[in-house]
Image (cartoon, rainbow over all chains, first blue to last red; front, top):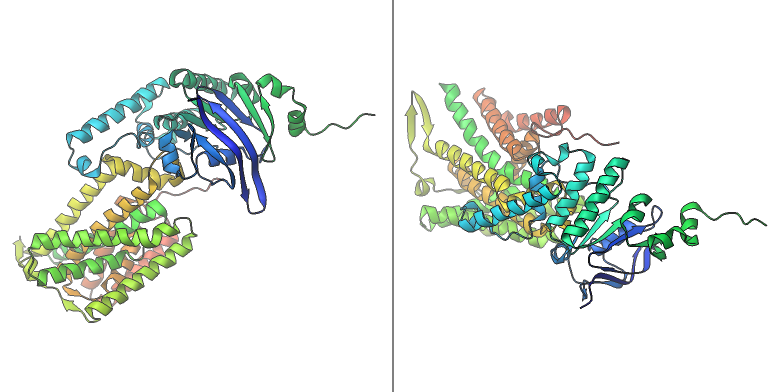
Length: 259
Length: 292
């Protein structure tokens, strides 16, 4: 088996008459960080929504570990190993840091209601194990000492980090990060880069990230795909993308021809 | 003395409202649906209790049967009518809920007749009156209050301490995010309906102990008042539903004590209007600041 985690083949989706994404082809290998960039409205988040089964594709297919994901639901694709964060942070604000991570572990702990009400030993064991895993994850990302805090009270950068940790708790094979650096100051962005590198190093999973912060994208991605009006206009190494004429045009507009 | 016995009375009535209000509040908290069929589930539960008692079943069996039937009924309603409408506009689901409520009332009328049937309380519990320092208290008042408090403790425990409770809280805060984190939202929603309905099942027996005349339309006004209780307490909030229930119960009894028994419903809805005017999110509701 090849080490390709996810493969999109001619993926496309229409909303009414609008073609949001068309002819999207991309495969991501395990322990590879790839970037998805493009101007606003290019269809980047739509692709995340397709990959996580929030939307059903109009055309084409998504293969996960070689299997067609056509009949999978949002829950089952997550269980299979696709996790994501959101463009605007969507933590469970009224729950504690620990509880947020435990929700991510929901799929991993198997314990029914009867045994949890009766506090059977199986409940204790699985609950204790889940808590251990959660605290371990929090320790990796330096949040162990704030595990009792409500998620809503955390600073912006920490909330981002917690959201990533929560997604990691579902033990994904691929992690989709939707604009993780949005709204961050340079220092926070730098920390985030470290965090992402750490994830790739420690967890050996594939990461696909949408980002507008070019320093971050160019700094950590080994492959970058550029999207404009729902179509791929370039795909390649960071250095290739930087010098690609089409990409420059998409971002800055076409220059006047000088006679 | 009158005050204390009326207070007990109010607590008993409030307990029943609180138990039903919890069902409204939890379902609303999870999928933002006002389940108007909730009161009618209680009505069906009361009939189950009535018939099984008349068939001289063991009281514990009657109670178990009532709770199980109410729970199953709610699960069936949720699976058949609400699940297919999960992505429909909220108004469609609300109207469906009203439709289910009317359906249940009419089916009961068809099968059980429109006139009220006396509930054989003595088969379940021999009515006794205790005398505490000159205050007369019925045993059904005490049982109602205790059962309600125990139910609430169990419920709070489920929501705060179990894995499914954690999933419930996650879904109520952000359904899509919870789903994308691998929480099976359909199971959580069904579980919420089931918990709410089992409380309604308990409520149906407590209701029958206090008002031993069962007819197909008892669910209507009772459900409506429990709904008011949920709003007054802050819909979506579990302690809110409890506080709202007791507020309405005690208020009603006070109005009756002052000799204005014809005004009880009016006063309850007046309270709803006042709460909506001054604190629309209810007593326990958080003020939701719209982000601009």
